[in-house]
Every structure is written in C-alpha cells, then in structure tokens.
Amino acid sequence: MIIRAAIVGYGNLGKSVEKLIRAQPDMDLVGIFSRRSELDTDTPVFPSAAAADHAQDIDVLFLCLGSATDIPEQAAGYARHFTTVDTYDNHQLIPDHYARMDAAAREGRHVAMISTGWDPGLFSLNRTLAAALFPDAQQNTFWGKGLSQGHSDAVRRVPGVRRGVQYTIPNEDAIVEAKAGRGAEISATSAHVRECYVVADEADHADIREAITTMPDYFAPYDTTVHFISDEVFERDHQGMPHGGHVVTSGDLGGSRSSVEFVLELGSNPDFTAASQVAYGRAAARLTAEGKTGAFTVLEVAPYLLSPVALEELIRRDV
Ligand SMILES: NC(=O)C1=CN([C@@H]2O[C@H](COP(=O)(O)OP(=O)(O)OC[C@H]3O[C@@H](n4cnc5c(N)ncnc54)[C@H](OP(=O)(O)O)[C@@H]3O)[C@@H](O)[C@H]2O)C=CC1
Ligand SMILES: N[C@@H](C[C@H]1CC(C(=O)O)=NO1)C(=O)O
Image 1 (spheres, helix red, strand yellow):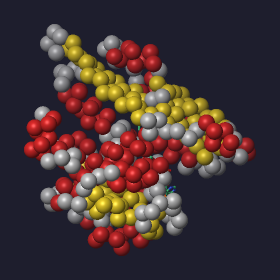
Image 2 (image 1 turned 30 degrees about the vertical axis):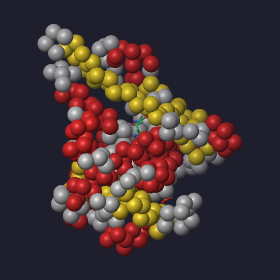
Image 3 (image 1 turned 120 degrees about the vertical axis):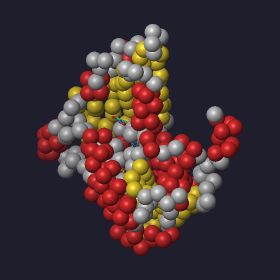
Image 4 (image 1 turned 135 degrees about the vertical axis):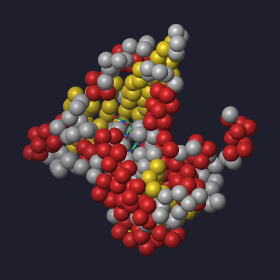
C-alpha cells in the first residue's frame, strides 16, 4: 500500500515531516498546503484554504500546525475531509481535542490520529505501560534541557513578539531523587523552570512579559523568565532545537523493588517529532483502510501498525 501523504503548515515540524516522508518506502508526498504561496521546497505547494479540493488525492494529511491556537481553530475542519495526524500537546485540553476531532472524523468517515510525537506520544505510551506494571507506581516525567516547540509557538503568538523560543530546564537533583524512588513529592511544575528569549520592541516588553508569565497551562504554573534580546543575538544563539527527557517509574512488586526509565536524547526536536508523527500516519492510513473512523490516541494503536515491516517479520525479529 503506497500512502499518498500531504502536509499542512511548513514550519519547523512541517519541514521535518517532509524530510521524513521522503525517507519512507511506502509513502508519496503529494503536496504542502500553506498560507504562503512561495516556499523553499521542490514539493508542490497549494493554498491551505483550498485543501478540501485535493481530498481525493490524499490518504493522510499531516497537520504541522501550532497547538496554542492553530490546532484548536483549524484541525477539525481538516478532519472532516481527510484522515489526519496531529501533534497537539496542550495536555490539559487533549480530552476536549479528542472529542472535537472524533466528531469531525466520524462525520467525514475518516480517522483522526491525535497528539502524536514524544510528549504527548512516546512518553504517553511509556507512562501507561510502566504504570500498569506496578500496583502502586511512582512516576515522574522530566523534560530538557531543551527547546519546547509548543511553548515556543505559544510565545510567538503573543502580540508584539517578532521572534521567540522557550527552553525547559529540569532540576537535576529532582531527577536523581525520582530515579531513587523518592519522587512522590516532585511535580512537573516544581521540577522545571522555563526560560523564554524574545525579540520585540521595547515599548511592548512589559505587556509581553505579563502575557507570557500568566499564560494558563503553558507558563502560569511554572517559574518562568522572559529575556528580551536583539535579532543579532537571536540569530547567533537560538537556532538549534535539541531536546529530550525522562519518564521514571518505580514501585514495589510484592517485596522487590523495580524501576523503569524511558530516556530520549533528541538532536532535533522537530525531526524526532516528525519521525513519530509519520509512523502514526502509516497507522492512520491502515486503520482507515480497515474501515475505522473517529479519533485515536497513541494508546489505542497496536505498535505493529507503525512499522513498514510485515507483522510476521516483526514477530520473528522483535518479539
Ligand atoms: N507532541 C509532541 O511531542 C510535540 C508537538 N509539537 C507541536 O508542533 C507544533 C508546531 O511546532 P513548529 O513547527 O515548531 O511551529 P511553527 O510555528 O514553526 O509552524 C507552525 C506552522 O503553522 C502554520 N500556520 C497555520 N496557521 C497559522 C497561523 N494563524 N499563524 C501562524 N502559523 C500558522 C504555518 O505554516 P504556513 O505559514 O506554511 O501556513 C506555520 O509555519 C507546536 O506548536 C507543538 O505543539 C512539537 C514538538 C513535539
Ligand atoms: N510537546 C513538547 C514536547 C515535550 C517538551 C516539553 C517541555 O519542554 O515542556 N513538553 O513536552 C514540544 O512541543 O516540544
């Protein structure tokens, strides 16, 4: 089965998804839908507003849009016409996103694969798997030090921000404590600080700092610092997007203690996120071909559906 794929949104993630689709043995990239008419790519470019006109030519549409506002505003509209895959990552609102995408996908008789990536995504899988092993699991998630694309997107949507990034910095002592099984008192908000670097006119600095540090879900619960820098410093110091993290789970198993740690070290956050999103795109296409409709999270997808390798071979190779 050759999967005819397309992308909406040609930002950091969209460029990585384009690169990863081209590396797949069973995918063809039909086009990129963008608000812009001129993109630096050889892939055919079409206006986002006209996406539905191409629905018959596309099996899976990768939504490479921002989670802060684009996905809530636009994703359901695409899900009515396409099988979609997104990386929506505002954890507090994922249940709402699930319901909205489920209704839209069922209306159009498509699949909506939501919140793929690494967190949510592969970390979600590991949290569920590891916690299921222990009658009373102790589990902690840590991110960074690295650039959060979701938080950087949220920063860039604040009025007056011309360029912006956000780095997540974990408390290393907290990670050590969690690994030792002493993570019960450690929360995500107490174990991380968030550092934002913003290019904006000085007249807007106070309003921008206030808007970022009080932003619900993304920044308000955290110790957040906003640094204002020049374009030159931004170009010099803020181009890479490394990231990573840990999910640490431990507990007692009837008198013996065990622990499970899932670690990611990402040279490029967008490239790794794209790798997850593209693999779940393969699963979305297969679920659609089986006649499935509605929304799916990564917790509801059998792992073999992600792989281009036949199940019989996976059983021989990996089981
Ligand atoms: N689940 C996970 O583990 C992860 C999730 N993510 C998610 O990926 C999202 C995208 O990140 P990233 O690619 O860095 O973001 P970018 O800002 O680089 O790209 C977003 C793209 O969305 C398109 N777009 C559509 N409507 C709008 C609008 N109104 N304003 C601005 N852009 C718009 C634009 O493409 P165009 O101009 O071509 O139309 C833009 O380039 C993040 O918000 C994050 O939530 C990222 C990493 C990990
Ligand atoms: N969704 C995140 C992926 C991870 C990183 C993160 C954080 O630094 O807070 N939370 O989840 C992203 O957009 O990069």
